[in-house]
Length: 196
Image (tube, rainbow, N blue to C red; front, side, top):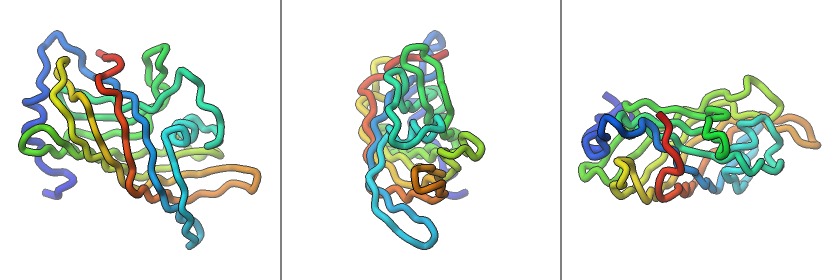
């Protein structure tokens, strides 16, 4: 068995929820990372943040203003350990666009239950739009405290991986890979909402 598909140990027991509790906790995510852009054999350094990810997922220019109701969010099923990275509507409490998913087989936990590594498989979000996330993966490593609602609290995380994107600007349309280096992911201390 590969490490990526490794063994889920203590997180599920540590995060077990009572039958009346919610199934998914929603955390807002502030993501920033230094990246190396790889296109046509050329490398360029770039800073990327959650605004660019939200805009690409919604088929907008990376420089567009993100509407106030939209945020990058991690939906975490506290009973199974499955997670998704989404554009979330803060007013309507609904997912606007799914960016990435992981199954519980992608979750690795530390023996003390206070840390996890999560592999998020990015999907082709808009099927070839002029501004789009085309695929890739993110590995999120995190430390957390047990939360009062049965889900992680005070998550501190880092991220690495590769994001394949298509970007259109005044110079034209370009497809390239973004290699995520030294990513920092800030999460809301507690879930902002719960979904059934």
